[in-house]
Image (cartoon, rainbow, N blue to C red; front, side, top):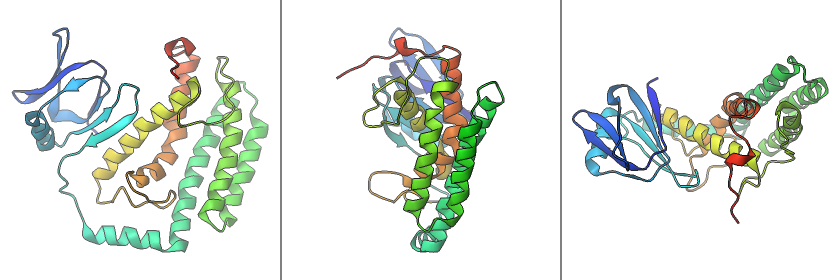
Length: 266
């Protein structure tokens, strides 16, 4: 994999010679090594032109854009060259086959719930007694095998997450009082962090899907719909506990982020 750049400064993003340069409002410049860059994440107010976009397309660089509040706005992706009508047809067949779709959905949630279990096992081995919760999660995981529908499987996974989130108050060494997942809008520091980091995982998964011949709108666990890449939601489930949650635990336990770093707006 190539390099990923996260740009929080405001200014101009432009092509200069055979490179990409960010020039901030105070005149400072930083060059991004275009030859080894895979992705650019924009969080600042950045001006650009079609000369830059053509260059990014030529180099195969994906650019994800976030608004002032850190919400995902969209992605610029170079013209697709790795496409296959045959694979899209096969992907739709898997979605349309209830038995095959349920099998795929179960595999996704089994992997996701195992990574949840791994997180608890990690902290249980570091002096936090989570053995009871781990046993409960293992019991629920075993019930996935006999689930007869995707909704039933997701219900089991929802119960696993309920137990998992109750453990965060023991894992995190700050007074967080985390009770449940709230998304739209996030209602506290923890939910805000989860939403933000999950959005980074979704966009990373989208970039990786674009490198394949899969269609990101045809999913198996989540119901496909309009205006969203639902296959990203499917695959991200696997990585959220292992990458996103562990990052949140690390940031909070090292006091790199505290309640003072957040602003509440009505």
